[in-house]
Image 1 (cartoon, rainbow, N blue to C red):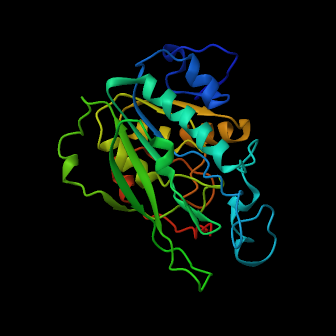
Image 2 (cartoon, rainbow, N blue to C red; image 1 turned 90 degrees about the vertical axis):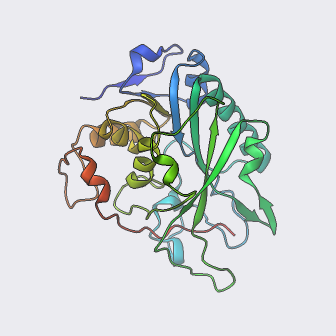
Length: 282
């Protein structure tokens, strides 16, 4: 069974391989030594509940967001910071990720641009000064547009930050920089990574130790195991730590009806994924 470690102010990579660390990701990463992981794959909260106008509001019980799990926010995190504070916090997190990746390491950082009060909130602001190599466009399909004032938004950005020695796995450079991957619907986490998306990232790298500091329901670990890699997960919510543990250990599979184990085979990458109509934040 995958262990959940309660962070007590000190941690070492050797003691947390293939484990879930329950704690604040910034505090945990600051205790890790330099150059101790190969790849970081993560998606922080998007600050969705700091919305204006027609944006998402917490605890919406009627209308277009009533069935969206994200309306309730995250466990133990409000997702509602002032813009400047959000950017500062995420820059601190990215700085730690850059510090702990190896000389040939890489970071796949997923976030989403927003428009608030008619002004662009460009997530590229978070990454100024960091070693950005490429921006991958993740195109979600199957969403529903409830607002006649806007075209249907279906894209997010995956920023590839890496040290100069980083190279893709053999043949991965044949992929384009636009990835069409459907969102998952049955996962009880309010904003889950699609497993297919993380499979594409993990299989495109050769790094053995993969870190996800915003682990959520543990998709990064599920994919890491599938491709024979080690993982380190950090998650602030104990509830999500337990969700991730059950998923990693095969006790739950939300893409099937009921709780059933699924073999960790590469063929499962091709399984169909259900679509979740994500909101837009204008």
